[in-house]
Image (cartoon, rainbow, N blue to C red; front, side):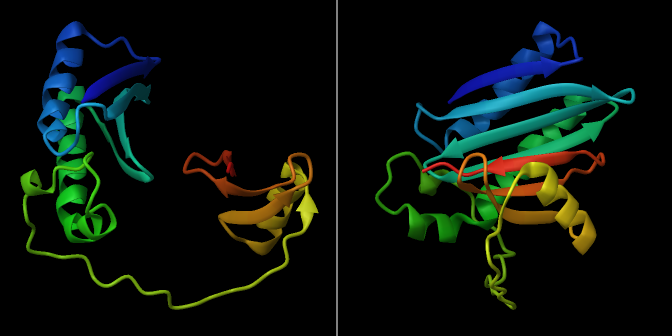
Length: 175
């Protein structure tokens, strides 16, 4: 597994980078060698935030942690990623049974198999062409934390959402 480490408002020591690579290499045994893990290090109010993302053929494993100690945060992120892989091992095996990028035999079994995923409500609505500002306004008027719309500028389905810090995000679709 190739580990890409970037930082924002954070000066990562070589020792921390080596620790991150070493810890994530333990997860590398679950995947082929071409897989990349992206790690973002940043500082939030005197605390270190560690975000790790591993993308494998349409499936994304992601974990983050904010703590006073970056090394402790790395341990928690690796533990969360490992837990995700174990919890969803059976479902992943069904989806990727012939895929050489997953090494299922190495993923440990877990006792608490996730509950059956159920859709309990379905809504249909008309996609109305609008720009991002109009979509945010509509989301706020509805009191929702996200809103799906047809972006009139790109002619594609987009989602605006409210982020934890109060700002907004935009998800754009591609084909």
